[in-house]
Image 1 (cartoon, rainbow, N blue to C red):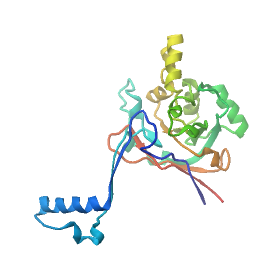
Image 2: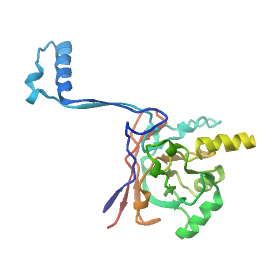
Image 3: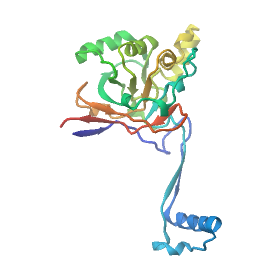
Image 4: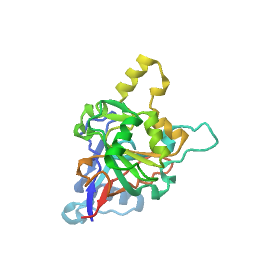
Length: 257
């Protein structure tokens, strides 16, 4: 079995709209820290030098959003449904959505903005079939080449509302992309809204999740390493964060050698 890493890293050196803060407590600092904690909480006077080389166990402290790095969006992220159905948070989602056969669609020649159903239908013809219920559909836009730069958030291709509905109507429940968002980039959305005044252009792919439950798998990478358009399994199990609208995921594809 070949394991292909489809995840982008969480890296505090990257440009992000929400800054990532990564503080490392090194082994020397940790020895002093645990010594202080033992004294305060247990009344034990233990010198840091009691540990080998005066060093204890390192630790990492991070400040970041659940939408940093490769992650899974839960239905609760999309907002209220307008019905008595309460959208589920990431810890409530069925795990069998997240280990499923995959299909990758090539959007690398699409313009910045959002493509519609006709573009997806052409890709289905190229692949030789439509997605099956619960297939994990991945969009290969090539946006991960900009990872760590401002262009990652402004230069990519997403889906419009009808294209998203097409996948949901086919039974897809996890739609992934190597871009920052499944919707068009923020500058494109705002410019289109200013030109048209049409509220339907405002984050339609996300808002489709109010009508029907599904998860977005965002900020993937390395989709060019997949063995083909089909013939692999995607594992994208999200971290179980109680009550959260998203959870980080180490996404991999499993393919036969």
